[in-house]
Image 1 (cartoon, rainbow, N blue to C red):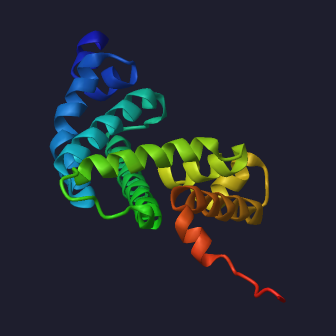
Image 2: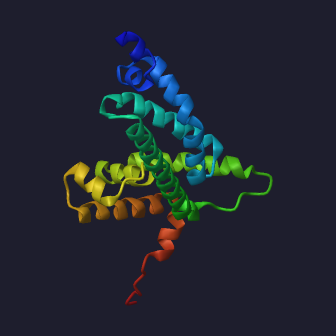
Image 3: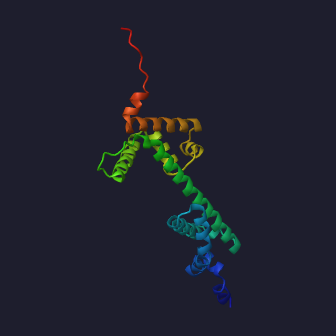
Amino acid sequence: MDNLRDASNPFLSFSRGETEGYKYFYSLHWIYLLSYIGSIVKRADMAEDICQECFVILWLRRQQIRDESHLRNFLLKVARNLSLHHLTTQENTQAAEVGWSHAHQDPVAGENPEKTKTEQIEKLVDEIEQLPLQRKMTILYKYFRGWSVKKIAGFFGVVAQTTRNNENKGKEQLRKTMNPSASVKNKKTFPSNS
């Protein structure tokens, strides 16, 4: 008798790690979760990726879910956090591209501008790899993973000001290597005594 009752309870099946319960909640919540994520990120392809990730997290943390209403709230919270993280990461990446795009010269007539942009991005990645370790990791974690200065500082076990210094010095070093002519213009020259 208990087996029949358990079979009709999708939450119990889900919490035990049985795929039938998981499939039930997946089909029940997929549409509204996808719609909710889409309203935040405004891109259907990215919304689908984030939605899939939400259900992976749900499966991995199924032991922490108390009941069906907690499951729904958990999914919404994960969806919101992942969506906002995606937007933050996207903004930081765009800011990095804009901040360093001053090195981009107008393409010569006949050149493919997309190829030029790709080459510059590849050069930027190579230059980031050449930075000293702390500067490199600060740039990568802040602009490509979307971490805050406070989070990076905590991760490395340093004060926030050290992280800001590493970021600023790293960006300055990248500006110099990506556009050496601009750094020469900014250099102060002193008049000679002769």
